[in-house]
Image 1: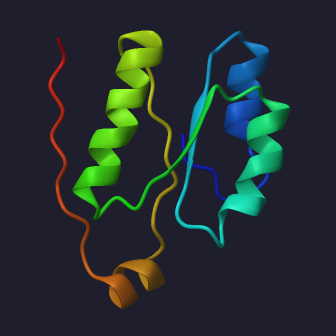
Image 2: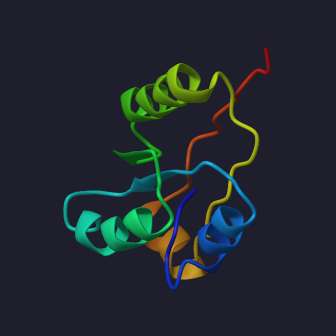
Image 3: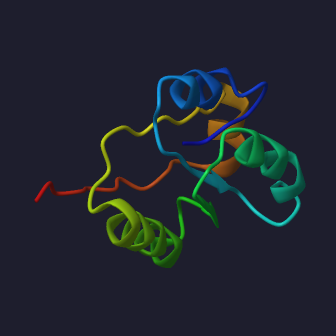
Length: 97
């Protein structure tokens, strides 16, 4: 689950009984995500730059070890400005087991 603002989605999911893993882009973003992760009892809080294959693999490995599978993925959309300034994101394919 990626959070940009108030964290309405993780709070609602937590109230519904979901177990949550959260990510943050980098060390600069971590202090903004940590309070929400704590508030929703996130079991995992890991860095995730989606252009970094090692971080993607580490996230999914941690999820698999903790819960065996991923049921729901929530992420924010990138703005047009983000897409223009940073280029396109790679396509990531996941397979269900």
